[in-house]
Length: 189
Image (cartoon, rainbow, N blue to C red; front, side, top):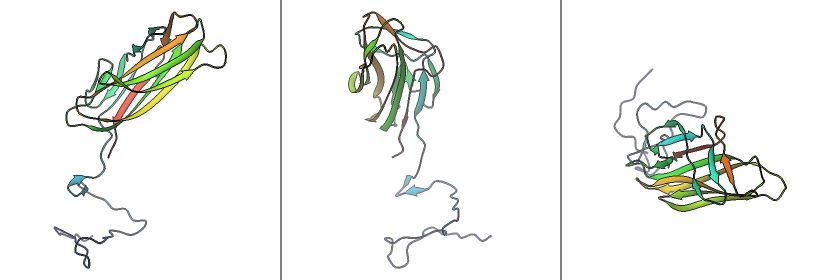
Protein backbone atom coordinates (compact mmCIF):
# COMPACT_ATOMS: atom_id res chain seq x y z
CA UNK A 1 0.00 0.00 0.00
CA UNK A 2 1.29 3.46 -0.92
CA UNK A 3 0.79 6.67 1.05
CA UNK A 4 0.29 10.14 -0.39
CA UNK A 5 1.52 13.04 1.77
CA UNK A 6 0.19 16.49 0.78
CA UNK A 7 -0.93 19.67 2.51
CA UNK A 8 -3.55 20.76 -0.02
CA UNK A 9 -5.36 19.32 -3.05
CA UNK A 10 -6.70 21.85 -5.57
CA UNK A 11 -8.54 21.06 -8.82
CA UNK A 12 -6.00 21.49 -11.63
CA UNK A 13 -8.03 23.55 -14.12
CA UNK A 14 -10.28 25.60 -11.86
CA UNK A 15 -7.95 26.68 -9.06
CA UNK A 16 -10.33 25.82 -6.21
CA UNK A 17 -13.79 25.93 -7.78
CA UNK A 18 -14.05 22.52 -9.46
CA UNK A 19 -15.01 19.05 -8.27
CA UNK A 20 -12.40 16.62 -6.97
CA UNK A 21 -13.42 12.95 -6.95
CA UNK A 22 -11.81 10.59 -4.45
CA UNK A 23 -12.39 6.89 -5.02
CA UNK A 24 -14.76 5.18 -7.42
CA UNK A 25 -18.28 3.78 -7.21
CA UNK A 26 -18.40 0.79 -4.85
CA UNK A 27 -15.23 1.73 -2.97
CA UNK A 28 -15.09 2.65 0.70
CA UNK A 29 -13.26 5.83 1.71
CA UNK A 30 -11.91 5.79 5.27
CA UNK A 31 -11.40 9.22 6.86
CA UNK A 32 -9.20 9.23 9.94
CA UNK A 33 -9.57 12.43 11.91
CA UNK A 34 -12.21 15.11 11.46
CA UNK A 35 -13.85 15.72 8.09
CA UNK A 36 -14.44 19.46 7.69
CA UNK A 37 -16.34 21.89 5.51
CA UNK A 38 -14.74 25.36 5.57
CA UNK A 39 -13.26 24.68 9.02
CA UNK A 40 -16.41 23.22 10.65
CA UNK A 41 -16.72 19.54 11.42
CA UNK A 42 -19.02 17.58 9.12
CA UNK A 43 -21.49 15.16 10.70
CA UNK A 44 -21.86 15.04 14.45
CA UNK A 45 -24.07 13.57 17.11
CA UNK A 46 -27.65 14.25 18.14
CA UNK A 47 -26.66 15.53 21.57
CA UNK A 48 -27.63 16.90 24.03
CA UNK A 49 -30.26 14.18 24.32
CA UNK A 50 -32.50 12.81 27.07
CA UNK A 51 -35.23 10.24 27.67
CA UNK A 52 -37.52 10.36 30.72
CA UNK A 53 -40.63 8.39 31.61
CA UNK A 54 -43.17 7.92 34.36
CA UNK A 55 -42.78 5.05 36.83
CA UNK A 56 -45.92 5.95 38.73
CA UNK A 57 -49.21 7.48 37.65
CA UNK A 58 -49.87 11.18 38.14
CA UNK A 59 -53.33 12.22 39.29
CA UNK A 60 -54.56 15.30 37.41
CA UNK A 61 -57.57 17.41 38.38
CA UNK A 62 -60.22 17.63 35.70
CA UNK A 63 -60.44 20.89 33.70
CA UNK A 64 -57.09 22.09 35.09
CA UNK A 65 -53.85 22.67 33.18
CA UNK A 66 -51.10 20.79 35.03
CA UNK A 67 -47.38 20.32 34.50
CA UNK A 68 -46.55 16.66 33.78
CA UNK A 69 -43.93 15.12 36.07
CA UNK A 70 -41.38 12.59 34.87
CA UNK A 71 -40.17 10.20 37.57
CA UNK A 72 -37.23 8.48 35.89
CA UNK A 73 -34.51 9.66 33.54
CA UNK A 74 -33.24 6.76 31.43
CA UNK A 75 -30.40 8.82 29.92
CA UNK A 76 -29.36 12.47 29.86
CA UNK A 77 -26.15 13.11 27.91
CA UNK A 78 -25.53 16.61 29.30
CA UNK A 79 -27.33 16.50 32.70
CA UNK A 80 -29.82 18.97 31.24
CA UNK A 81 -33.08 17.30 32.32
CA UNK A 82 -34.14 18.17 35.87
CA UNK A 83 -37.30 19.27 37.69
CA UNK A 84 -39.43 17.81 34.85
CA UNK A 85 -37.93 20.09 32.21
CA UNK A 86 -35.11 20.12 29.67
CA UNK A 87 -32.80 23.16 29.77
CA UNK A 88 -30.45 23.83 26.84
CA UNK A 89 -26.85 23.68 28.12
CA UNK A 90 -24.36 26.49 27.55
CA UNK A 91 -22.99 26.46 24.00
CA UNK A 92 -25.66 24.00 22.78
CA UNK A 93 -28.19 26.28 21.08
CA UNK A 94 -29.81 25.10 17.85
CA UNK A 95 -32.79 23.13 16.57
CA UNK A 96 -34.20 20.42 18.84
CA UNK A 97 -36.69 17.63 18.26
CA UNK A 98 -39.02 16.65 21.14
CA UNK A 99 -41.68 13.98 21.57
CA UNK A 100 -43.96 13.15 24.43
CA UNK A 101 -46.38 10.27 24.68
CA UNK A 102 -49.01 9.97 27.38
CA UNK A 103 -51.35 7.16 28.32
CA UNK A 104 -54.35 8.93 29.87
CA UNK A 105 -56.83 6.95 31.95
CA UNK A 106 -60.10 7.66 33.74
CA UNK A 107 -61.59 4.38 34.87
CA UNK A 108 -64.90 5.93 35.89
CA UNK A 109 -66.10 8.23 33.13
CA UNK A 110 -65.61 9.26 29.52
CA UNK A 111 -62.67 11.42 28.47
CA UNK A 112 -64.22 14.17 26.34
CA UNK A 113 -61.12 16.27 25.59
CA UNK A 114 -57.38 16.17 26.09
CA UNK A 115 -55.02 19.06 25.37
CA UNK A 116 -51.29 18.60 25.74
CA UNK A 117 -49.10 21.65 25.43
CA UNK A 118 -45.44 22.51 25.07
CA UNK A 119 -44.03 25.45 27.00
CA UNK A 120 -40.78 27.24 26.28
CA UNK A 121 -39.55 29.37 29.19
CA UNK A 122 -43.06 29.18 30.68
CA UNK A 123 -44.96 30.32 27.56
CA UNK A 124 -46.97 27.96 25.36
CA UNK A 125 -45.35 27.32 21.97
CA UNK A 126 -47.53 24.47 20.72
CA UNK A 127 -50.36 22.14 21.63
CA UNK A 128 -52.18 19.01 20.57
CA UNK A 129 -55.95 18.81 21.13
CA UNK A 130 -57.99 15.60 20.99
CA UNK A 131 -61.77 15.41 21.32
CA UNK A 132 -63.94 12.35 21.85
CA UNK A 133 -66.69 11.90 19.30
CA UNK A 134 -67.34 8.21 19.69
CA UNK A 135 -68.79 7.03 22.97
CA UNK A 136 -67.34 5.64 26.15
CA UNK A 137 -63.60 6.16 25.88
CA UNK A 138 -61.95 5.88 29.30
CA UNK A 139 -58.37 5.43 28.03
CA UNK A 140 -56.46 7.54 25.50
CA UNK A 141 -52.98 7.38 24.05
CA UNK A 142 -51.76 10.73 22.90
CA UNK A 143 -48.47 11.63 21.21
CA UNK A 144 -47.07 14.96 20.15
CA UNK A 145 -43.79 16.05 18.54
CA UNK A 146 -42.23 19.45 18.07
CA UNK A 147 -39.12 21.03 16.54
CA UNK A 148 -37.97 24.20 18.26
CA UNK A 149 -35.07 26.61 17.68
CA UNK A 150 -33.57 27.10 21.13
CA UNK A 151 -30.78 29.09 22.76
CA UNK A 152 -28.66 28.21 25.78
CA UNK A 153 -30.78 28.54 28.94
CA UNK A 154 -34.14 28.01 27.19
CA UNK A 155 -36.21 25.29 28.84
CA UNK A 156 -39.04 23.03 27.65
CA UNK A 157 -41.86 21.53 29.74
CA UNK A 158 -45.00 19.52 29.02
CA UNK A 159 -48.48 20.27 30.35
CA UNK A 160 -51.83 18.50 30.16
CA UNK A 161 -55.47 19.55 30.38
CA UNK A 162 -58.44 17.20 30.16
CA UNK A 163 -62.19 17.30 30.53
CA UNK A 164 -63.97 14.14 31.65
CA UNK A 165 -67.68 13.58 32.21
CA UNK A 166 -67.23 13.03 35.96
CA UNK A 167 -65.37 16.34 36.51
CA UNK A 168 -63.15 14.64 39.09
CA UNK A 169 -59.64 13.39 38.31
CA UNK A 170 -57.84 11.31 35.71
CA UNK A 171 -54.40 9.72 35.46
CA UNK A 172 -51.35 10.17 33.29
CA UNK A 173 -50.50 6.49 33.54
CA UNK A 174 -47.04 5.39 34.54
CA UNK A 175 -47.38 2.07 36.31
CA UNK A 176 -45.79 0.12 33.46
CA UNK A 177 -42.49 1.08 31.88
CA UNK A 178 -42.76 3.49 28.96
CA UNK A 179 -46.52 4.03 29.11
CA UNK A 180 -45.83 7.76 29.28
CA UNK A 181 -42.53 9.30 28.21
CA UNK A 182 -40.76 12.50 27.10
CA UNK A 183 -37.57 12.70 25.03
CA UNK A 184 -35.60 15.14 22.94
CA UNK A 185 -32.33 15.68 21.13
CA UNK A 186 -30.43 18.32 19.20
CA UNK A 187 -30.62 18.05 15.42
CA UNK A 188 -27.43 17.95 13.38
CA UNK A 189 -27.41 21.05 11.18
